[in-house]
Image (tube, rainbow, N blue to C red; front, top):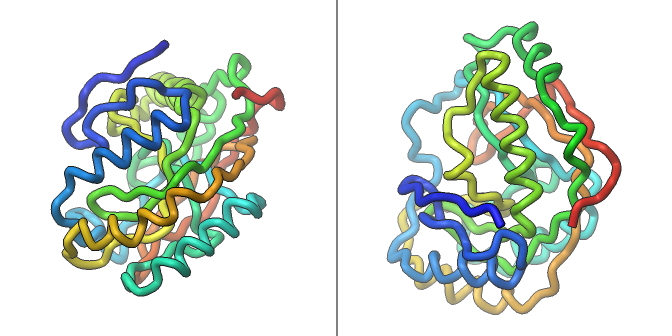
Length: 239
């Protein structure tokens, strides 16, 4: 089984011992959050301004009704934290940053799409497993990781071929789906106490049949984007 190396900036810092088993992935991420003493303001990020625009590879979930309903349920249960909830049309899984929209032309994006060799891949059936959190957000753990890692490797190779390498290596990739961004410093124990009862909820599934190149921007308390290009995945489902 493919393993990922330790990358300090990633959360969790190390990948789980299994990249396929949902229970192992969920337990690993919860244990990592157990070591966080204080959550931080997600929006305190250098380099982002109201005018910043950048291209990213992203998976979105506009038709994933079970995922959307579960996110709403959890957001409602956590409402007293007063975090910045992610709207249903804002649920996403980020695969990697391509580059600034001021530096990357649309022709380069077309070359990037043409360079992506996805024939050996297929659409993905993901599970959003028990709620957890990171240093700056409350999120779903997702499983399995293996097809997402394979997809990201393919996109990274396309980026190298098109002269648009991804900013971070795949070894630091930690797939997840956020539901709420932390907007201030707060003791992590407070958040753990709120999240813990939600960890008994059943996993929900979401099918991934496309990956998008989006132009991402930051609006007050939210990320928003425009889809610029779409890459269809073959229809067989990997589990």
